[in-house]
Amino acid sequence: MDEYSLNRELLDGVDKVLFSSQQIQTRVEELGSRISRDYVGKKPLLVGVLRGVVFFMVDLMRTIDIPLEVDFMSISSYSPESRNLGLVRVVKDLELSITGRHVLFVEDIIDTGMTLNHLLRTLKARQPASLEVCVLFDKGKNRQIEVPIKYKGFDIPDAFVVGYGLDYREGYRNLPFVATLNPQSIRSE
Ligand code: IMP
Image 1 (cartoon, rainbow, N blue to C red):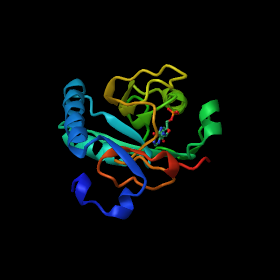
Image 2 (cartoon, rainbow, N blue to C red):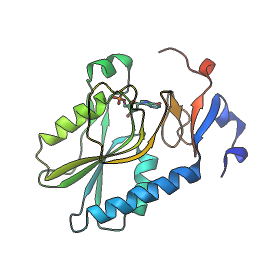
Image 3 (cartoon, helix red, strand yellow):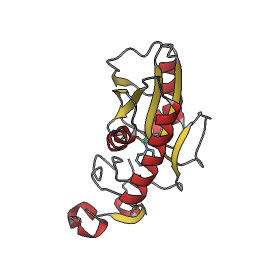
Image 4 (cartoon, protein in one colour):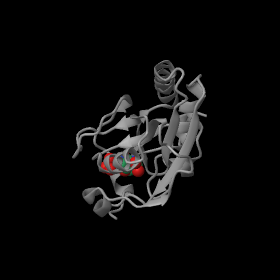
């Protein structure tokens, strides 16, 4: 499946492709190799937040060639208010205990850093043996709080992006690439 053979309805509102499916896969494989080397003998527990991270998590797991486990949590949806306050509500918690485990927090995109900061604090309180972050897309420019990122896929410009799991109002997640939207397609919340 490439950009040109996709259903036109799915492409409605899509502006510019920033990262092709191939570029993403190549980078994910590089991250997976590094993680495989760094976690030998540690059986890492990969933790992700539903639903945006699902594509990245699955592809990343496939490239990691050491034993691992995975678990997901779910938080209240992203809104400007919760974002500014760094407040997120855990709607579904992890099912596995992370105490004493080597936890790798896998995130699709980081913008202000507020969500990640909040979640890392929550997880740290459960006393994992180690806690590191792997993020696919980093907006950087909007960062309001420093968060330690050990594995990073790509730096991206400060624009709203969709695809490869990332949504706009729950749409576009199944685009195989990551793209910006036409400004007129983005309605204010
Ligand atoms: P932060 O707390 O500002 O770092 O926001 C992180 C969360 O906002 C991500 O996990 C996404 O759910 C969402 N988000 C931020 N930027 C984008 C984007 O460009 N597209 C889709 N979701 C985004």
